[in-house]
Amino acid sequence: MDLLPEELLADILRRLPPRPLAVCRSVSKGLRAAIDGRGILAALAHRIPRSLRGIFVNCVDQESPCFFSWIENAAPLIDGELSSLGPVSNRWREVVHHCNGLLLSLEDEKRLYVYNPATRRWAQLPPRPKGFGHAEHLVFDPTVSLHYEVISFAEAPRKPIPIQPDIEWESWLQGCSEYTIGEIKKLPAALRAKYDREAEREGSVEWPPSSYAAQVFSSRSGQWEERAYIREGDVAATLNDVWSDPWGLEPTCEAPRYNAVCWRGAFYLHCHGGFVMRLSRLEHKYQVIKTPRLDNIFTRPRLDVDEFLREYEPYMDKEACLIQLVREQELLDNMKPSMHLGKSEHGIYYTALLCQQLQVWVLHEVSESRPILEWELKHKADLRPSFLQHYYMREDRENIETTWELDCGEEGSNDQLDYGWDSSDDSVINVKGEEGVNIGGRHFGIRDGMDFLGYHPRKEIAFLGNGFDGFVYYLGSTKLQYLGTFYPAQCRDRQETCESYIYTPCMDDLLPDERNTTHAW
Image (cartoon, rainbow, N blue to C red; front, side, top):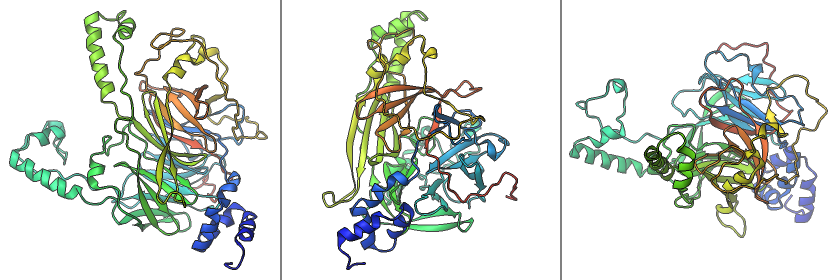
């Protein structure tokens, strides 16, 4: 192989299908360099299942996910509510990860399923061993193998908590093992100083550790096993970075979505503490990549007094309006940006969103011109003017023809249609409007937040949400297009989106047909 001219070797490799070609990368470093250096696998990426079919969305207080999809391309028939898994037995069912056509679903916070909504085949995983985190991630690359893995990493150690039994606890805190922030502030000076020294000492420890343990379920073996990933390169984070994460370790609806994506044989995991882990699955090694700094990169929105009074004086007196304005301005001043790790046309994207301000970075891999992995700011925009000018603000928006809708997997879809959304229409319908005014009876102010739903898998297109309204935003032309609504049926009072997953169907899998099968676990 080494005797072949480089051009001839590249020509031979280009003739291989994606799956054998990806396997060749693991044979030797020379083959891997030839494939990656020539971009051969990337050139064959069109064979990888990346046709966009829709977006799975978990909503607050909804018993099952909803599926927001393109109306005109309705094949294959997608089980949007994961109904083939059977009725929700107790509380709820949610999607916790998606990877190349397979979903990882969690039911009642106990049972894990790997599910293919296109083939409706699925497998229930055995209970995961105790002692590891609650976040599981699915790894599936059909260009390499139809087998899959589910990975769960050990959680970061918690910040040390001082023990002082004579502190009075509130009645509802009697069973808690940790103090609140307020209680820590009440500690005697000597105990507080001892606590600070202990926290500083333990917080300086490198995180993740040089050998990072994970529990991995393999569809080959059908069981969980412990696996160690060895760190390559200098450490980029410590436990102090994790503990000082402004979002904290407890997930909330507004918190960043610490998700994971597969790209060119590597697995990227967004972690607390402002870093991304890049795992090599074949070599069981990983790198730590610091995320872009978000300090002072956004302009803090300022409420306009006159605009605020026009909006609220019909409902309350002027003094109460001004008090409310001060409160809402404080909320804006303390608002934290939301972050999202995803992938699109150029690889790994890191996105930060504050109110209607959007910033996007792309991760550049190591090359001759770039000796280290680094982020490059690719796009920066304020989307509020686009929303204020958009026809979606019209009073009669319910009568506007939409292209996407909430899909519950109803029968009767045309299975002869191409299901890869390939919209090249960058047009957007605008109406005249001014900032801070009502357009057609609808108000869109700087306090209206937005959800980031994900990226088109092969185009420079971002999917955004405002409430339960879906939009596409074209990074190249900076145009905004209204898609439709994904308002869930029987929606309860809390109208929030928790997580969202871009869905690309894959008709190949090794999942069993479990519809008539039961499990002892």
